[in-house]
Image (cartoon, rainbow, N blue to C red; front, side):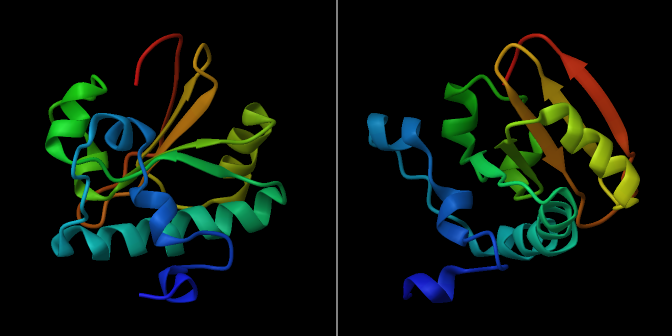
Length: 142
């Protein structure tokens, strides 16, 4: 697949969603199963890209898809939406403003969790089922 073919939206590429520094460091296979691709597209097209446009500031994917093994090693929840392609951890300069923009945009989402100590925001969007529109604040965690 050529680099442009991996582009899912104007601002996000599939390889960003799959890349994991920890997986590379540990030699883990974090290959993307085909069954999670529709959920990733849903997350990118229906939440991340519209939010990025509304926010008008760069948003960097720190963690997207995680294999079960990678999720366990980073201390993720056993039922983590990262393993389903429904969640992403992102960094942006003004995280509080991003949360304000998320609410103001009226976009559908399942969870937005601001990890204050670690400095990133977890965003998720379920492909199927009811999205809770929960905004949570945590001091620690993955």
